[in-house]
Image 1 (cartoon, rainbow, N blue to C red):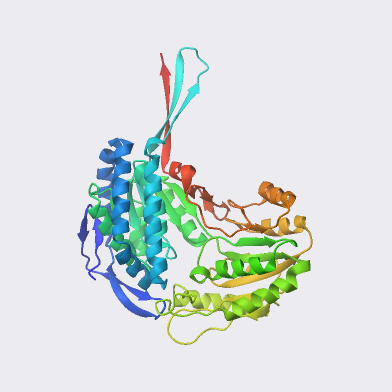
Image 2 (cartoon, rainbow, N blue to C red; image 1 turned 45 degrees about the vertical axis):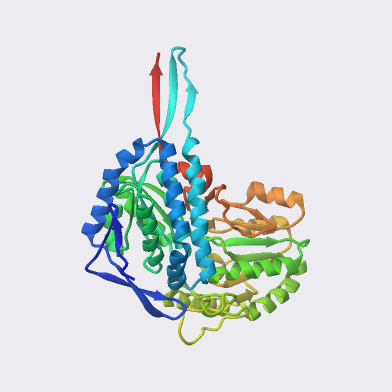
Length: 471
């Protein structure tokens, strides 16, 4: 397929290219254009030029445009899914489902058209009214991760667009083809040229795009390291950052939990997309009275979890994104074992093609170990015992990250204690994270600034103007 960057309502060729590998085979399956700095500037200029007219449209008209966009994405779900499966190692069904879910998310944000509200604030003066208006920011640069590249792309552009902004999107260079196919939906939806721009580029070109004087906001889902880079970009123009960064989801399992149910759910949550989810369970704190029984249950499940090319068998766990991710994951496991962790399952670096890693279970872990302190972003789970609810809460909170958290118990007092005191943007009780898009997905501590989803995620893409009206 001839992939091209989408700039100012048209597909443009490029002189340079980026190779894209299928992580299940390690082979190059596509080349995408590598935008030049001139391309990036043209995209931002196009977005800036289109934004005033887009902003002036009645919000209901923007909502209609988003619904057309959603219909066009859904109509292309097979093509988007095929590209996504090849670039990510997901099954065709999962990849197509991500495209459909993205269309649903787009329709959800279209419904904000009549719900973006300001405020009327009482004045201290009897002949005066204070009006707080919500306005778009302008041009938003959207930096997309590799793990859920279609869902996250829509998660960022849909609220930005309904609020009256225009966007420049940079997909991950590991998973860019699905985004360029999705760009065809933007064209088919008859969006005004320049409202949506999608282009692949190097890090140096991304810096030029993000530090362009017209960019008023940069939104990223990515690593802590990437977040620090984006904050550096934001300094150029004091652009607004919205960052979802690292996570290290703690799972607290109380003594009254059903270990068969929890064990099965934990295995599924840990191995979905090879553990490459920001909210995937990464550290488990289990009550000492059921610790050994849970380890036995998990050991059996982890050892039985097969991996391989999901294009051949969708029931298998797929690959990590890159050879580097595979090597780094194994190195973290080896360092954990050297620090005294016990290997219960997995932990062997596979040979052959593809960037696979087995479901790996570690017991005898300590809070001060790297495997507990740093995000793995792979199918590796560290397990630690606790004796009291207060101890479990303290361990869960003793961390640099605070994105999501999970608690399994039927004790309502323990639930409320965690609901009041967990240092994370989300607490899931008796279930694993699924990011309901009407909620608000936001991190504490080093897990980010701002957030996505729901009313509050949409309002991230607005700024306020206070009007002091003397009558």
